[in-house]
Length: 372
Image (cartoon, rainbow, N blue to C red; front, side):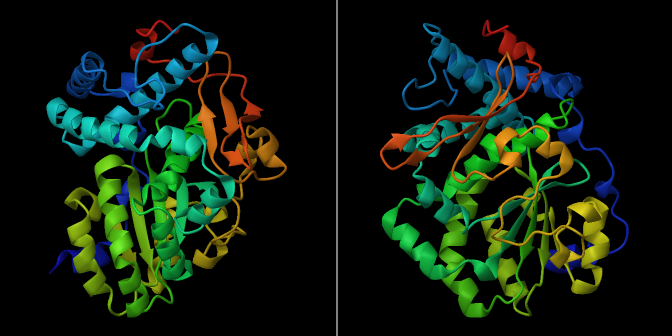
């Protein structure tokens, strides 16, 4: 039995992972085992002595505290690193040296692209054009509190991707939606579960209506994006549910096995229509599952996020009208902020959409930066 067949079989019946707590959800630094905490401490040390913290290209990771703005930026960077480093440890089996090697490669990649600046200064209409080609957040979370994304492959036109690649041959802008997830969606969801970390997402991949030619035209783009995501966004996936798999899916699976590492392919479940609702509702409450997939949520691919009441209570202006373009969740000592970034015409947007009264608790590593 090949891996595709095995995963298809295990998609039915009970799945204890739907309700059991995982190390990824069991809390902040204090909840790590002693050996994992020691590994994290060593990785932190390696990053510090090698100045291996990504920031905007302007500061290149240096510790600057000459103005209030610089102190704010430093706290932002420290917080992001503490959220990101455990991903690399898990991806490399909690071997600090191996995690540092991968993390260093990501830092070099981000600095080369100036990815933070690219995200903060992205032209809003271009950002939205890219976002519409990628997995989109429903505005809801799984039963574990993890954000739920949907990717309807049939609605991704190869011609649009070709136009994007001509405008941006490096495809660096393809990662703007990934930054949207890590800089806004995931920390926002974490804020609603302040005693937990939320380092990953659930993805529903809808292959309904996808033909052989459609997939073949997307193949090169999907391969490149998948490879880069595996390298630079490790352990960002909790589960992937593939729906509407066409008859030629075993052929697609052959490509997927080459694009991803085994620990990621093991998280993929291919669900036949007869099992779709039963399996999905083990992981996602029926009120948070789109109607198209057997739930009650009025949301379709291409719509803005449909937030639940808890999220509506903390997102400020977003509760009244969704704001397009890059959004950032910025942790601060005196209260976290949701900021609308990006450029409109000739102006750079930096508008505070919400101010949350309580900040996330700082870890010991952040206190070491003298920010408490």
